[in-house]
Image (cartoon, rainbow over all chains, first blue to last red; front, side, top):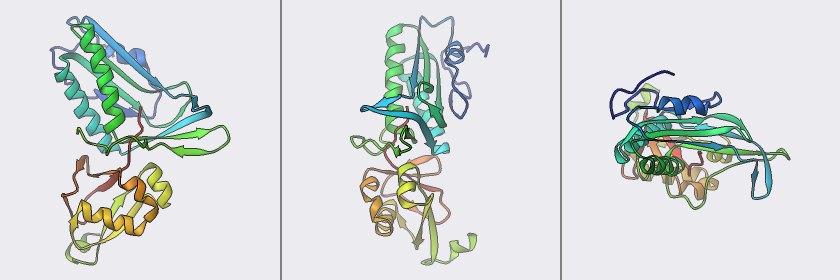
Length: 159
Length: 90
């Protein structure tokens, strides 16, 4: 992916993607590279193998496709403006994700590190609150549980 | 389904369910007899049809197409309606 974002506003198509294929974080990081950037942050969320002492074999992700893509696009554009980012890429997995594999990755670049760190954290918080994607924990004992966090408010509050 | 648009009172509003809600309901969607109304009306009807969904329903948003919509939003037959329970991506 040898693209060179021309300006400050990274309006590239495919900036936010939902895919069944494994995530390649190196590709994501390379995609946000820019001569104007001095800080590049890559966050990779991986499927956790142990939750509350119970062994999770794999996670299965499901999404409301059109709404998830739209919400991710909006969050990405908000992050670009709010943190004066040079570029931003987001990828989220769908379907089965074996424990240890990447389920989500965010790469951002900005002139300075502070904005890049802040943007990556803000995006993860918003994604976990507003993007209609759900995980099902599939345990070693064959049991499975859809995760709908009790503390969460109604999704879409910021969309 | 298009003929349903003209049969007020007997038309069916199809609402998509996801994740734990689909599992509890045992179906990927719920069909409501629909003579018109808002998201809040749809919430009440879904609760009546599937009482087991009530705890999640209270914490769920509604969407039409690729937009979240509020409780005051009117829904018409043919709308691409979905219930969005608390999300757990990441």
